[in-house]
Amino acid sequence: MGSKKRVAFVLIAALIGGATLTLAPPEAAQAAAPLVRTSAPAFYRMMLGGFEVTALLDGTAEFPVDKLFKLILIDTGSGRIYGPTLGSLVNNMRAAGYQPEQVDEIYITHMHADHVGGLMDGDKMVFPNAIVRADKRDADFWLSQASLEKAPDAAKEFFKGAMASLNPYVKANRFSPFDGETELSAGIKAVPTRGHTPGHSTYVVDNKGQKLVVWGDLIHVASVQFDNPSIGIQFDGDSKAAAVQRKRAFADAAKGGYIVAASHIQFPGLGRVRTNGKAFTWIPVNYSVVR
Ligand SMILES: [Zn+2]
Image (cartoon, rainbow, N blue to C red; front, side):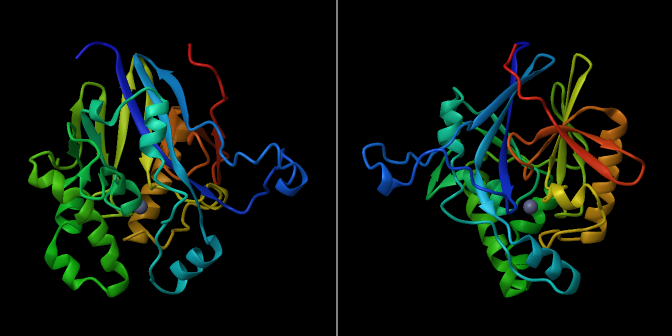
């Protein structure tokens, strides 16, 4: 492997209310210039030491935040980010200059369907040349027929989604689980952050004194959880452990001043964390051209 390395991570931005800015007039008013209804950017690129880091937008989905947080407090239930607004990964990857066939390794933070669903397109492996890596605890849990059968009905879809996405890679000998903290390639290490799922992992990219930590699902709703990291979300498998990991990750990021990549923070999901000792604040990276 040469010194030029590329890391891409996939972002699923949560849309939390917010206003829509319409710059084109309504269709009826100017039919000659139909509304385009697409948006840029679909990828964002920055350098981290010798690594070229690309944030790829998979799409956005509306999050019923009030209901999810309420459900966390009083009950468990089903909830899945799903729909036609997601699944743009391959298109955006091509726009960013990569082909799916060029992907060598895929590191999975955890096996929820919004993080592994893109591995398959129907019965076709989207990344036929890639080795998929994930903590064995997530594989043992989500790919287990016994766990599926034991799971409450509302949770079965999560298991089925993980199995449909991962099993073809397992069968093709393209899945290689790891056990806890592991150096996966030079400058990239998996660090266990169990809680959201049994084998949730973050990935630390270190190069030439610069550091990036890919958080996965340590956070879902920036506007709520940076102020109060003890608030969990319905999808946290073990909400206490997830909160411990979240607080630890926030504090470490604030202390270390490194760049963080998070799956559900507004695109491109890259930023730093600041603290006043209690609450935390997300500071998005300045939008800048790659140098
Ligand atoms: Zn998740």
